[in-house]
Amino acid sequence: MEQLQIWDSHVHLFPPEIYNNWETYAARDSWFGVLTKKPENHKGTEEAWANAEEALDCATQSGIHGLVMQGWYWNDAGLMRMHNDYMAESMKNHPERLKGFISINPKFKKEAIAEIERCAKLGFSGIGELGPGGNGYDFNDPDFIEVVECANAYHLPINIHCGEPVGHPYPGKDMTSLAPLPGLILKYPDVTFILAHMGGGLPFYELNPRYHGKFKNVYYDTAANPLLYHISSFRAVIGLIGSKRLLYGSDFPLLLYPSKNREMDFSMFVNQIRNDACLSKEEWNDVMGNNLRRVLDI
Image 1 (spheres, rainbow, N blue to C red):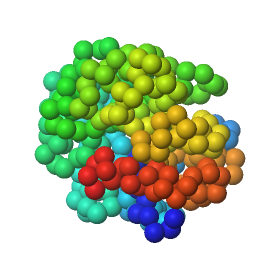
Image 2: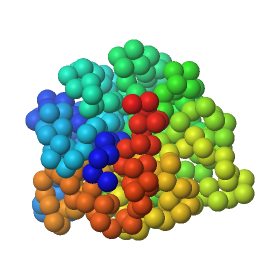
Image 3: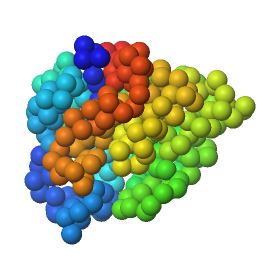
């Protein structure tokens, strides 16, 4: 298992200017503030911070080769561009180990499409993570559909935040209905959809006769999995859809085991998958790197 080139499909690396001046930027973009505010009692989940070099050092210590930087769902166009510029520079500095998805807000309309076009020329590998709840749209919104059309034209996969419709409430929980997604997936069979957080439960609905066998362009990532599901969810999802469409993603540097570790870390999740997810060697290789490398042509 150790010989595999592991890739994490879902990390968030912000420009140091933003996290070193968190109060300023949280005031500028309130949704960013809600999702990244440290709890007042110093307990519970919170965001840690890492620049590209720190993240790669941490990844190396855990046996991870590559990281896919997901963007953010900014409500400020200037911060969107600032974030994309930082990711572009990071990819330039570490071309063998970093890939980037374009930070975008569909509600910026023409400005959003122009940003996708600009970043596609800079070598970004996809679009996302899209956050409908934070940006005020749903999956029927014409502005979102236009982004899907643009992704189709540029042959870019899309990573979409999918909130679980059940469970405990927490700051920033996205309750956007996932009901339109299956129809959208069928309408755009040439677009690769990566549905974050195990698709909010959508793998189960692939068993519906209307959709069974028709989601070949859909992948699910495991971002924030320890905060949302039991480790047996790996086996459950593989039992539903097989191992070829599940992508290891951590949501780094989000603290995945906040009661045990309050520092940024990759190793605890990787080790839990290795020790407790009950994956065969082929399944491990698929989930931990080969699937993503195939999707992004790495």
